[in-house]
Image (tube, rainbow, N blue to C red; front, side):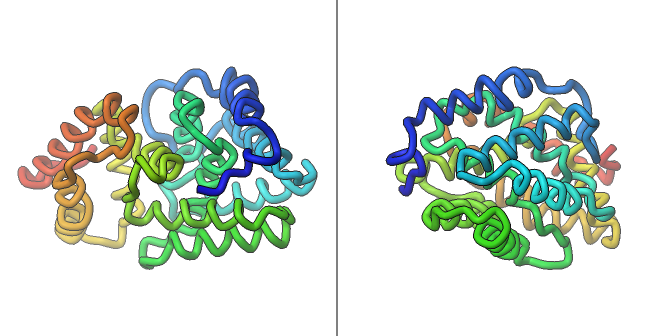
Length: 261
């Protein structure tokens, strides 16, 4: 796998920046409670600082990074979003902070997190491909990242988020990124229920029957049929049991015709 760290700086340098800066003190504690539709000022500042710090490690001037983050934040604040918001990115960063030492290229995962849902339209089935294209355009023409290998690898991770499948042995950073994205499935029951209700709101145009059928057939059953929901051992040990219980409870709720929340 391509690594931005091989020739430019030792892995400890980037990992320390994540741990001691944006992804250490700032990201050390998860806000208790429900999934949020938006972030507060402190959370927004944490996200901005993390984005700009990662961009600077790629040789991007902070002024350019801040402009790109402002535009990115506008996408994640689109009115049709309820779960796929800046709050989702915030939750992902909290999770990544706990496992950053397991990453070969921390900056790679940071940028994949920021851009993996930049395009989100529930009426389309190519959101990941469009998000990857958006990232490549921004990276090349606005951030002016010079490392084509890094740009391509971030795009690959973004596209993988559509299926959430890869080999954790041969593709460890991709597996770690995908598990971070799916970590909400292993949350405590009230937080999981808030997530499920928020996704349901994003599909408000669907009737209850349409939603239940699609949710079960396209997500709950296929996910529960996997040998393991989480690809990496660290996330499997932390969240697999909770995730299966949450998914099964949601499925039973549809069978009993109960509301999500």
